[in-house]
Length: 114
Image 1 (tube, rainbow, N blue to C red):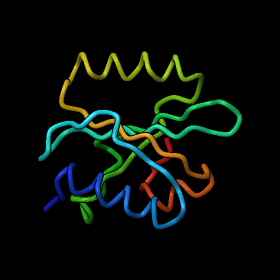
Image 2: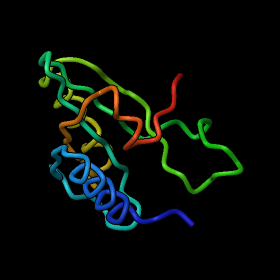
Image 3: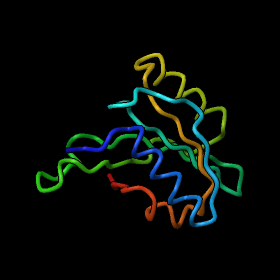
Image 4: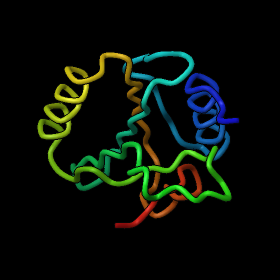
């Protein structure tokens, strides 16, 4: 059984804080099953947007895991526009902003590669 979105985000922030990082919930979505989007600001000024991975990324042996894929890497304005589009499609999304080393992001999120 997959954990709720609320519990997943809480655990993500705890792991981040314990590793010396910082994070904040920008948009609280549906407690049970809201889609989760994570933004990560880089020192270069770019922002990376991670979102739910495609269903084909899921393994039948681990169907309850949450996988993420990099959706966009660019200016903050571009990421904000994409998130606005996602909110229009589904107003129950979660948006979590984190400040973490991008090389260590896979310690926090299960990232799938295309």
